[in-house]
Amino acid sequence: MIVAIIFALLLFASVVFHFVSPWQISPLGSNWGTIDDTLSFTFLVTGIFFIAIVAFMIFCVFKYQAKPGRKSEYQREDKKLEGRLIWITTAGICLLLAPGLIVYSDFVHVPDEAVEFEALGEQWTWSFRLPGEDQMFGRTSINLMDDINNFGIDPEDSNGQDDIIVMGNQMHLLLNQPIKVNLRSKDVLHDFYVPEFRGKMDLIPGQITYFWFTPTVEGTFDLACAEYCGVGHYNMRGQMVVEGEQDYGVWLASQKTFAQVLAGGEGEGLVEQGERLALNRGCMACHSIDGSPALGPGWKDMYGRYEKLTDGSEVLVDEAYLVESIVEPNAKMVEGYPPVMVAYDFSEEQLDALLAYMVSLSSNEIAN
Ligand SMILES: [Cu+2]
Image: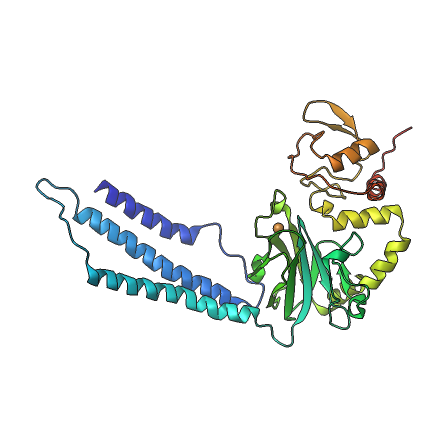
């Protein structure tokens, strides 16, 4: 009897929790209302089965409880019952699968009016590229990837010269414009997930995956990696800014083409090189430059200050300490930060550029 009551309470609490739970679905920001419908339908079907099965268990526990003189009896297999159960299960699975397959087909059938962008994932940052005026992406090769040419675009391919390389991990999208997102990974599996768009797709090394959507609400939406991809996975974030034509135009005009990036790479100073490296290599995922809190120590005024280490000692943040912290991050841990940074393999010149950038962010000076 007591077991039956516990089951009944659990059933009641589960149903109530569904309606009063603080974790409700985020408001829809794209055309994919059908994905919501599919989820609701799946939830309804599984919910009905859940209630029916638990109710049946309560009934059985109550009806067949142990009583003096009552004995269990052995029943040989019941072909008829098995047959019925197989058909009910089959029908249930078809009911759950069919709507999803229909919506998924729409999800990967890109309409003709859609434009494109590319999202490139790597541990643990996102980069974005637009095809430029010709609406054609330049050819890419992993052999061409370096710190200036993050996407590995072939400089020989004329389609690639006008490709727009978005700086930082914030991508802007035009409101109500259908868009196809092409997904590439540089290293391991990642997953492009913007909850409000209901869009979600794996990035698979060696393949280009894609889906399309139409952003229907203006605003800034978080992009989160939804496939565990290493210790920094939780911090692999970006942003999708959906805006009207005017704001989008202003943003687009401020971005550089691949040709400009290549040309700029030759004439840029150490500090700019360092800034580009920090952006491209994902430093900004964990370090802020405006003094805001982040996963790792912020770079604003970091150079020249004293940091307290986990062993209680203090260290002056000078060039030697900074280099050590980049190539061997766990050698001296600053108090209050988790030991999650991976060692970076930078060349001497790259380290010089990064240091120049960090020093430029600080108003402190170290007397020689
Ligand atoms: Cu990831």
